[in-house]
Length: 201
Image (tube, rainbow, N blue to C red; front, side, top):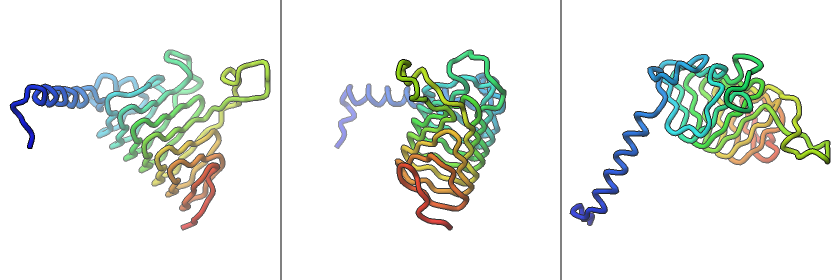
């Protein structure tokens, strides 16, 4: 039985209540001033607090009724304040769900169509590093950016990685922990590293 007369329990409960209040108040809603920084920020959309990294917002477009979980990173460009190559580098459609701790890192173009769901810790990028010059650290070498597209109604399980140049079709299920290195057709199930089609609906 809980002893609610214990001051430690009252303090813990008060702290939790304050944290929940702050989390709700600090979320980015369509009426928030921060929402005005985005290229598009649809009605009913929320970015939960706290985001891990969020910059290049004018090149980020988010549709209606989309929920982006806490500790998510969505970035357009390599650093805050960078001059960007275009004004539509990240496009997230209507009614999407981006799971907590996920990262979307765009240097050129990433498009996520309507009704796409991410589990936690999904990573999507359109840029990767090169290994050709042995005298230059790999982190300072880069390959040309390649656009990424994720089709409507698809679901990416926890810890999925989507690499540059990939086109994932509509209504595709990608199993947890998979690494998508090549295109996936519509209406399939893919698993593994690299991800392979194991079922075609």
